[in-house]
Structures are given as structure tokens and as C-alpha cells.
Image 1: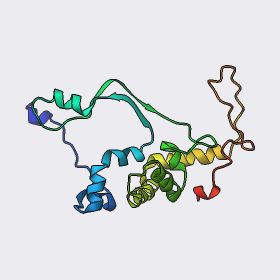
Image 2: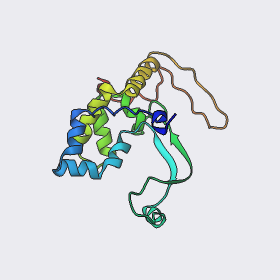
Image 3: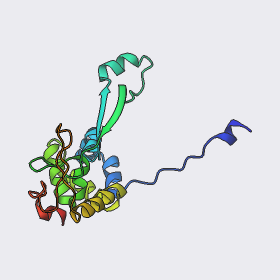
Image 4: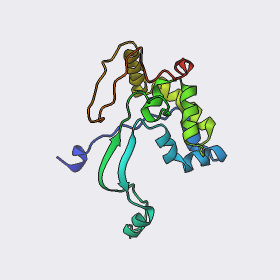
Amino acid sequence: MTDRQRSAQLQLLPDPPEYLKDLLERMGTHGRHFKGSLRQYNAAFAFTSLGCDIVSAEERNANNSRGGLNAFQIHGALCHHQEPLLSVEGNTPLYAQLYIYNPSYDAQRRSERNENLDNEIIENPSTLLSQCNPFARIYRHAYKILANHESPSINSEDGATSNGSTKSGSPYKSIDENAFN
């Protein structure tokens, strides 16, 4: 068997949604801003936060004696932090917590956390992800199940586990009900 026969046949990736494709191909102000801030836009729509020690650009450049592109590099372990499905009263929802709300509320919260990003660019993907991302649908479904069931109180002596909420005594009362519609 030759190397060519053993090689994997990779399928082409499908085209991105039209709005994102347009942003990636656009040469004007919006397109340049989006491409220049792509890592921050990706982070704004993440479901989890990244936990790692990122290698600095200076260190990557020093290790890149052949020139070319610098790859994303880390030292040590890589982990992802997952927040609870709902934020505690008084805390602003973030990461996956935003996917249970309607897209306009979601976009507003993302814009507040990322003031240097374009609000218009944040709004469209918020709607798009709400409609087509399977994980966003799973989070909304989980929220609906939890909202309709009473959870038991959990008492913890060491404070490592907080008291669970009940349907009637939820710490999430302050959330604007319109955020879900």
C-alpha cells in the first residue's frame, strides 16, 4: 500500500454563514476590525473560559528562528472553566450562561463585557448562534427543565458547596423575564 492510498481524505469545511463570510472577506473598516480582533470575538462567544499559561509573543518570536507564523503556545496544563448554568443574583451572566437568554439580551451583555468590539458585529452572531448552535439549544433546554423543577437545598459545613436554589426561593429572581423571550 502506498502513502497516497493510506492518506486520509479530508472533506472541505462548509462555507460559514453568509454574514461571517462577508466579514472575513470584507476589506473595509468592519472587515479589518473583525479580522484584527478575531481572537477577542471568539472569546466573547465562548462557552467556557480558557485556563492556561500562554507563552508571550516575545518568547514565541525568540523560539521561532525559521521565521513564519507563530503558533498559539502554552506552558503546562490546559483546562476550561465551566460556570454554573445561571449566574448568582448580582453577578453578570458570562460565557455559556448567556446562551439561555434571547439573542438581543445576550448581545447586550457581550457588548458590555467587550467595549472595544463593534456592537453590530456582536448582534448578528448572537442571533445566528442562538438559532444554529446545538450547544446553545442544549443550554436553553437545560434551563427550561431546571426552571420547572424544584431543587433540594444542599447544606455544606465548609462552604465549598453553596445552597441550591428552589423554584420559590431562587437566587435568580432579579433576571429580567423579558431576557428569555
